[in-house]
Amino acid sequence: MNETEKTQLLGMTPDELAAYLKALGQPAFRAKQVFSWLHQGAAFEQMSNLPKALRETLAETCTANPVAVLETIESKLDGTIKLLYRLPDGHVIEGVLMRYKYGNTLCLSTQVGCRMGCAFCASTLDGCARSLTPAEMLGQIVCANGVLAPQGQKVGNIVLMGSGEPLDNYDNVVKFLRILRMEGGLCIGMRSVSLSTCGLVENMRRFAQEDLPVTLSLSLHAPNDEVRKKLMPVARKYGMDDVLDACRYYIEKTGRRVIFEYALVHGVNADPAQAVELAGRLRGMQCHVNLIPLNSVPERGLTGVTEREVDAFRHALEQKGISVTRRREMGDDIEGACGQLRRRYIKDNNLNCET
Ligand code: SAH
Image (cartoon, rainbow, N blue to C red; front, side, top):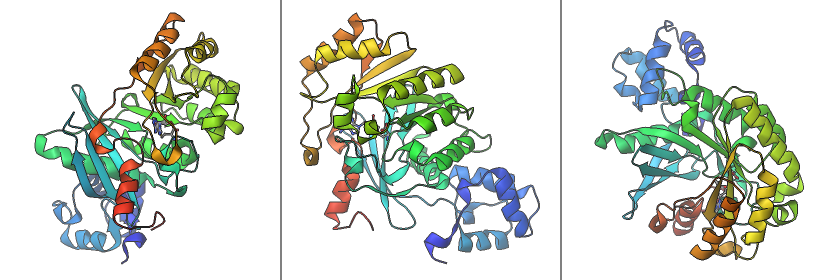
């Protein structure tokens, strides 16, 4: 059977697995066994408590993990590991594994590319080829756990900040999160997950009602609509007032604070007067601002800021009582920023982005 035709078992809930295995004549207790093996990263032949005939049938018709690691690159600066993965249809995606003192955080992709078109982002340069399935999101974690296994470690935190717009792949992301926290599987709780969105208002409101209280990160990048429209096409559809109202709704529903991401772009959004304007917009909100020095993307012609400019912007926000940090840059020597490694791989191997 062709790889793309195989059933992706990793994206099934235990109930769905039970139904699938029942159709193969298996008793109900098999579902729990298979679920546990899949999330441990076992291949079918390693699932030692399953009958041999079942293992063979599954190996012919299903994938245990649709994601395979193509390449890993470790940063000499901070131990950050960049992962390049291959999907069953040949698409290539990337992820970043950040090693903090308190644990390992994996940055996941939710789509192959992105269709949001943000001016500074490398992931969106060739548009979105397709959305990832729940199994392909879980599979990235299973792969990273495999990379960490020799050191007796695992992924503890997840950030949905790789390629793609998670709320543009709503149903699959929600299903992924529901499976992610299940006992007997990866068992990663929603407090250990951050979801970053460019601000798709209807889906933010819908997501607030899912009882999946992850930390919401909102890519704001501007103090007003005029500046936001220069950087983010999505701002033409949703005004900042509506986006901020949806954030307030999320805070109210989940009790979690919202984090605003703000990439400082020289000459566009980095003036201290703009920090003051931003503080005015955020006044009274239970929030935090994360300043990101721009990773310059040569294709886009936008430049980052100096340390002094970051400090001045931060200081202006602090003066207005806004909680703010500057994002640590990790893996600077290994093309840590969104979409850059994948683009280099595709270019070096003369691959077309659509293949
Ligand atoms: N689509 C989602 C998540 C992906 S990007 C979103 O828009 O939030 C994760 C974060 O990295 C976003 O805040 C994004 O705006 C930011 N980002 C993308 N390219 C960047 C660059 N070149 N420099 C700094 N931040 C960047």
